[in-house]
Image (cartoon, rainbow, N blue to C red; front, side, top):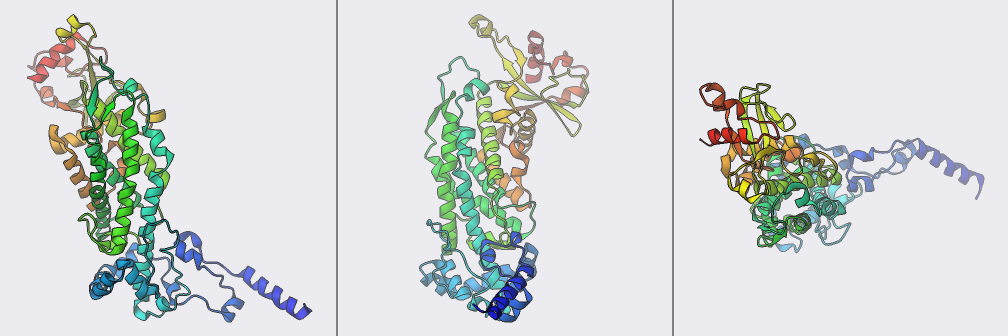
Length: 481
């Protein structure tokens, strides 16, 4: 190799080393795969990327500013026959039109590349003229929606779900019963479990509060997955569990089974179908929810799902015992009694206390309904170790919110409706963790009326600290009246 060739080689290397690469952290997988250097010498030799690079760094605001909801709707209507005739449906037809690739499927079938595309080198995409921006935004949204469903499946197959929920100490921690072998149906737990999985999927699609059309897309995520997961979870409706062991194991299996719903959602949407009456791919892309989506935070998703399911399970065990919330008097006021200082929440100036009415094991004493107030079973484990994501404050706040919406009849249907309404408002139910409304539905007894009724006998005993016994029976009788 002569000196002139070597000089030219090192000159080219030097030019490349001085060039500035496109920032990859803000790009999708397809953008990063086509990222090139932009050194001055290289530009003069070969301009690799086409006009599409002007549209990189897209945001939800860009989607909305350039009217992509209307544009995509018009494209689907105009190309309905092509979508119908393409074996890959919407993805195949759009891949053919935007990339010249009729095999662009974005299906969840084990392939890691069936939704990739090279924006820079695509002659077809860069030749779309005034529609290059719109084509690129839809390609990116489709690719990122596909990645979202893949991320959900990967998160819910992690061992974290099983290890967090499959515990052998549920009964020993949160249940105190004279018959340790008694069983209960899973129906109520499973009904709410579908809502929790839906909240998790919506949470995974939200980087923060969203508004407008994008909020509608997040509610579609919830509705679609809940609709698909319900029959899968329903297969366990007649199962029973030993309070000492099997509850967590069954719950973890339910979450893992929900992966089938994610696969179905991806494939049906990419085909161009309406998924579980939640809408077709237009509903999921509206407002640009996925045009700049950064990916599933798997650890956060697992934590949120675990905390909600754990809270739901504890709630069901608590509801089989004499556990309740009492309050409604002003905070830091002992007019109705001091209440347990370690089991209280002050909301809107009113204090609410969590109680457990414990009865003696002796048959004769128990027949007289003697007992005393104590912290609920497992109280000392809340907020730490395996149950760090559930606190006594979560139990009280969640129950109060549920009581405010449904009284003593807060059901799984109400929980699902409330979750959809919250998502449509641009809020994120999962942000509250186990304190989310309806995770707990512990009965609430509002005795605030007695605060302004000085003639009520023994009202100073209504709110007792832990360990109160026969005196509390007096107040219990008055409260029941």
